[in-house]
Length: 182
Image 1 (cartoon, rainbow, N blue to C red):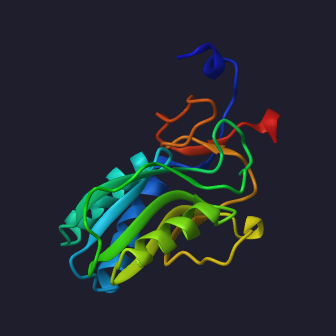
Image 2: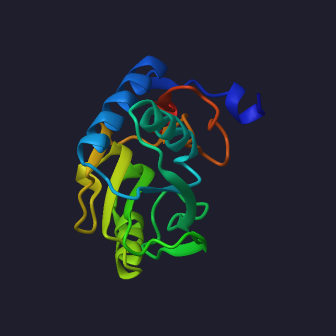
């Protein structure tokens, strides 16, 4: 454990069994949407654990999507969005005529996902669906709605299950927050 981690107490919001169950439910909801030529695009970095678990749940539910990654940033090293989205790493796969499932960790301001959705639609995706682990509806700055939502989240800066603060806490098997920083 890093020094950062040993000095902080994390309050659990969603534990590992809750997350696993919700991933199975999300996979069933996605299957019910009847995607065609499904390409899953995980938005890195925060979604990597969620995306991996959800992709395995999609497999168990009978889907065999192709998987890609995109790295977008509107935060850089800050806890608040700059409002400017930058593509740091783009997808390599052709999206034209395909159903795309964008997977991200949090839908907060909506800027990043709206940017990604518009980008993929402009490239000719047949349909762009959005799946997020957490949604903070009161923080929305742009008009976007997720097609699939894991959990509605209180307005905390969350860590764990792939999400971090200064690259710490990503490995936690649950989603939590640091009470002394709220």
